[in-house]
Length: 115
Length: 115
Image (cartoon, rainbow over all chains, first blue to last red; front, side):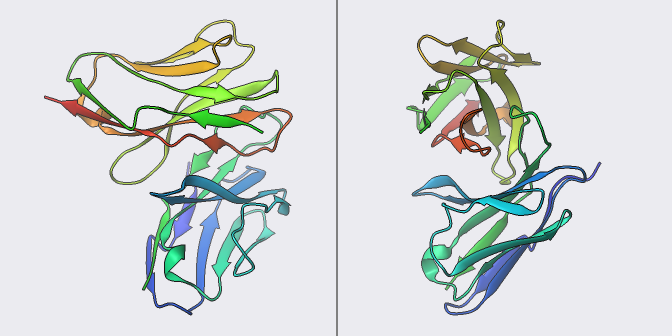
């Protein structure tokens, strides 16, 4: 069984460039989450989807960040324009439906460095 | 609102000994779930163990057990017979039925197992 797949694993870009992070959730999972991990702020929820619909985007830092889920098997997180303070590890996670006690299954993360 | 507190930034334990990682939580919900995740130096987030607020018995998964004290709002992780491979960051997280579907994480505890 394939887990959550994120790409790329590492991304280095210059300030001002557009960055797109990709995620494929576990098949059959109805919830998809984007988290950001930094030393200063720990693990923060950015946004989550249920059945491809964004439910809570209150964690998205600002308008430079956007996330989409065009279908059940794919999601993107876009940063445009990127800034050095966006440097972090971005995790995608998915979980099954109905049971609120289902664990989140995380991808391996994308380490983003903005210079 | 819900909050997770992990007061131990770092812990040391000798190989083969047991160690307890502390976690306290705050929520006004009666129904909630508590999770522990392990993050080794390679960066992935690994689900370890789950405890529901109405579970009468403490959860156990192999060498991991959860010391759940509901009245004190604590959910400490106990690792028995520590191994060198247990060296990692450990995160406590919670979700409440009445709240949003996503996990709220604590700041983590870095465990180092010494030979």
